[in-house]
Amino acid sequence: MAHSSKDQATIVIVGAGSIGLWTAYFLAQAQAGPQHASKITVIDACHSPFAATSRTCTGCIHYAFEADGLVELGRYSFELWDALSHDDAFRSAVSWRSSSIFGVERGDGENLDLLPEWLRRREGWRVNREFLGARNAMVNPIGVGKWLADRCTELGVRIYTSTVLTSVAQDEDGRVHQLICTRDDRMIKVPCEKLVLAGGPWTPAVYEKLFPSSAVHLELVMDAGDWMVFRNPNPSTEKSIAFIGLNNIVHEKLEFAGRDDGTIWVCGRRDTPGALVPLGTAGEVNVRMVAELTGRSYRFLQVQRNDDPESFEELQVESLGRSFRPCTRSGLPMMSAVSLSQLCERSSRRPGSGKVMSQLIRGKDPDIDISPFIIPGKSGGETCSADVAKTIHRSSL
Ligand SMILES: Cc1cc2nc3c(=O)[nH]c(=O)nc-3n(C[C@H](O)[C@H](O)[C@H](O)COP(=O)(O)OP(=O)(O)OC[C@H]3O[C@@H](n4cnc5c(N)ncnc54)[C@H](O)[C@@H]3O)c2cc1C
View (tube, rainbow, N blue to C red):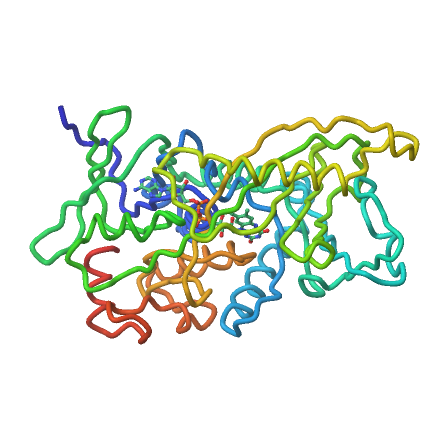
């Protein structure tokens, strides 16, 4: 039988990925006291927070983007990361390492000493320290997720996992006042004054399902990535935390990320369009891609014993999977004036997006210009009109 949740949630954030949790974190921080903070609820279909794309991304922090609007948001986000990184506990929790993104190119041996010990060096290579811009850092996404979920919980945010938002109840003005969710085949009704959709690649489908008559149309662009995590056969050092882009060597996307937990992450070319998996489930890997990534890992990782090409360590696979980048055709994220959702990849702007979303939810002027990110109306392209903004406001926040 349907029952009402006892929690009088005021702001409900759908999605406990990086966008949802950074938004909750900055919102809760800005609240006057625990009494207010307890009214922020995050729900997620997965069995734990940060279990979808946010957990399985590379972990590059930078703002070397092509679109001007994105550079400002990326820089703003980078400054937030940078400020947090002055705290030793944060650095250690997220395995922060500044200036650790490197691109390998054909060349004269320049900067080869920067390469981590887990990569096999080759004659005729050089290292580009500005592959993703001069200011950059690496983090371990798993550590980021744990740090964020812990901080949110400390700040009084309630995080409900294995909970799927399926429909909304609206009053006669179209204002959402209740969310209908399912958890373990039970229906749960969650009181809601403000709804924030931070559902990553699922946001467009969820929005259309919740608000079928809305004038707003969110485009869906699929961009999947197959990834593998290997145990690092070499001892971990400070230099192990590094991103290596071999794109200019193999002439397509090939990225490795070393972590201080004794693992190396690898990802290859994008799959567009890759079919999005049902909510709360893991993507099935592309078997051909896994074979290719494995072969390339043996080729580029330091697996040789005593420099003997005939003798090598077998790579141990820790995990593998397929993740989905939340994308738009323009390449820009989407944030309405009332904070509807995030829909973009190639970020490094996640704390920035979360902070801006939290400002919009609180009715404050955002720290940066968000006009490039306004959600377009149904015809697409044009900036969100006042009417559309009102619709979003009424139906979604
Ligand atoms: C292979 C790969 C590498 C990447 N590398 C980087 C990188 O180096 N740097 C970078 O900045 N970005 C990177 N990205 C992009 C980055 O991972 C994403 O931009 C970011 O994780 C998106 O976060 P999110 O919170 O929007 O989405 P997600 O992490 O996918 O979270 C969305 C959550 O919403 C939940 N949800 C959706 N609808 C509902 C519903 N109706 N009810 C309940 N729950 C719901 C889902 O279960 C999910 O957990 C990469 C992406 C990929 C795929």
